[in-house]
Amino acid sequence: MKPTKLSELINALEFDSEEQVNRVDLQNGCVVTVEESLLSALEEGNDEALHDLLDWQKEEIEIARRILEDAGERFVPLPDKFDFHEYRYMERFIRTVENAEIAEQLWRAIKGKGAFRYFKDTASRLGLLERWYQYRDDAMKEFVIEWAEAHNVPYENDIKARKQ
Picture 1 (cartoon, helix red, strand yellow):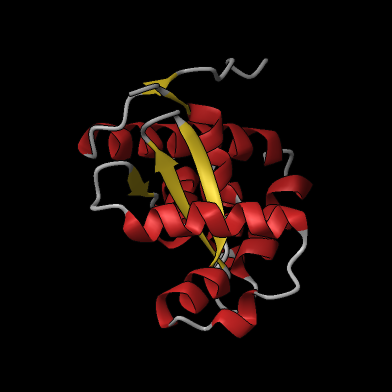
Picture 2: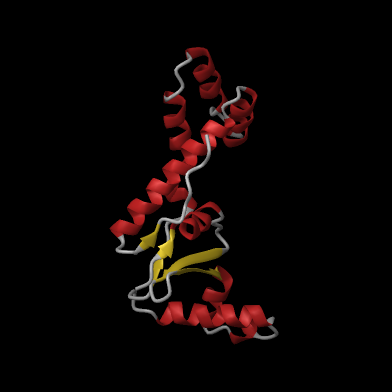
């Protein structure tokens, strides 16, 4: 088993989408991404959906076939962005803000529709956006490490600390 770079695991989590499936290939340590529609077409035996594909899509089909044939020993499903619960980390971040007035503005920003955008806009206006991103990056790194260890996925810490 070759270790997977933490940066690849984090990127897969950050850019997760319902239209794709992410797996760690334990054989080569790479994160592979396959369109959900291709996996479904293969599972259902829908060969019509697989005709007239571009070269890069044909390679993706081969990966999808390997994933479907795998008995859970080579390809490990990655957590999705909903497993990370970014909203919870925004709440935890606010609790680290010592100035009560500033914290209150952040609490108001995460209430209701558009909470993520309002939170980031408010953090930016208050000069806390970089601090938020550092907090979030650290939390995501810790989350991915815990996931990798729980699923016996070897990893390489290739992430450099952000300059303060």
